[in-house]
Amino acid sequence: MVTIRPSSHRPNGGPSVAKKVAKKAKGTVLCKADAVPADGLLQCAAGSLKVCVARSGKDFYAFQSECPHKRTPLCDGALDGHVLTCLDHMWQWDIRSGEPEGLAEQPIRTFKLRRDGDSLVLVE
Image 1 (cartoon, helix red, strand yellow):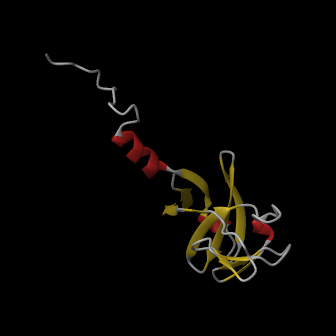
Image 2: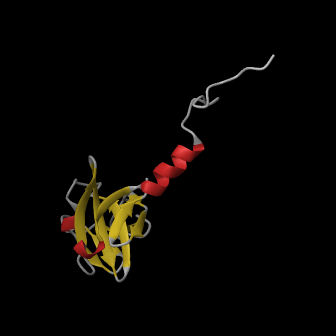
């Protein structure tokens, strides 16, 4: 006996691989690249997710918008190369990895970005 399933049926109940790939490729536009100040920070949003975008030289990085210690906005911090400092209590992180440096006791969450023309896209 042969069972015929509708094409939308997935044995594992999840979305098709094609849909996953399409969603990942699409992403969410955060901002225009030139909106991020040279060697500076810009608060952006992807839906309800607030993200801080940093420009260090020619590279862009995205990470959580609040300090894990006291919820201070990280876009109000200071950026020196790849090191972000929360000015509220001087915790520091490497924006490339989110790893703590110096006094910081917790990492920050980082997000993948890609450039699409003049836009910065948060890869989902």
